[in-house]
Image (cartoon, one colour):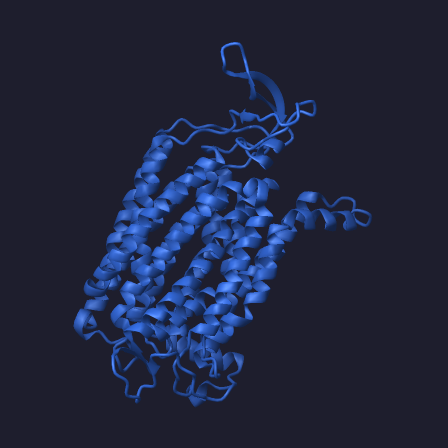
Length: 553
């Protein structure tokens, strides 16, 4: 383990015992002038923009698996359960490593730096999963003729996604630990508001300008987002400085596996108050994560050789809905952060969970009252479509004719962008394909998605602000990892069971019932947590159990 050493400071940031005019904020050994704090906030938020765009790439994985004909069970296993399993195995170790690490770069930035390269390799490989699978299949076929392209394709996605999930555990959580180390508690709510506003911008950019082109240009989307992330995090590591930390406890050095588990468990799991935080997180994530995986398939289900109730919206319409509703969060986040600093994150968390329970209950009504399209075609089928030619008829309207076009070609290229379908089509002819497989979004999808994203903004902001408000700062990484470790147990089972339910009923609308049920449980747990927090001192006198100094806002 590296020895304890002072960390260089940025301009305007002074050691704790230094004297400098204009010092307004302190956190640990860091003292900030207004200008220095704004500089740190800029680089942190710039890195967050890149991080959130990179994280959005995970929403493409279910679509890639669906194209290969993977079942809901397989999709849930790869997208969510595998990620949760890796988190269970390594996140407690990462939290302890990061809390106890001492180096000239600090205790957080070294982990952010070393994970850039492997994450980039895994994500770009996901973008090229199809040609990689074709190449590997051609190598395997002479020795194992029974291995199908579908099997190889799913295996490639599992390996690449697994590598990304593993190394991403050294990026996303450690970045959040860094927030608690360098952002003063007086502006924590405002920073989290900016943090989530940047997340909303990233969601808008991804869904408006990138997601609609997933079918045709998936590899370029992966490359663009990955390179932006890598460049931005290199800048973050270079421009942001951590303060100095006291040496870790002597008993924490060189612990064996059994001693580590005992020490970690005693620290993180010995108080009932922290258990209420963990369990609130568990049921919240069990509600929302399956929706991230399967909800998108309800609105846009790729063609399969089986019946599955879904809306099957035009890809560009789904992208527009997701993009514009992200802008709702952009408006809410900056203002909400101000109120969270004033009235505490727990109160807003409870309100958000009540709102989300109501929202998904309405989603049940909307989804089950909406006439459904049940696709029974496969990628190999050809469907009758109307071709609008650029040439005009006698009435001055585009000539229209009916032709048979393969579903695979439509799905790959996109309905509105498909050109040169027929081999005998005149050069330069522009065609628009209108295929009844896709549908226009009913009005309720816009209304419901706006409601959901508005309430989700309240939950996301209050949830993130709650952790530095309630966990001890000196062992913040370990408590955060314990929290994520507990809710990851639920995530091991939630997507798996949810996928089985959807496969059994062959109805993606069941996701609304699933999420509504777990949001109800999360509301109950958050109320119990709030009452316990009041007994521990509440707004003015709360001290984290096992700590000697206040940690929160």
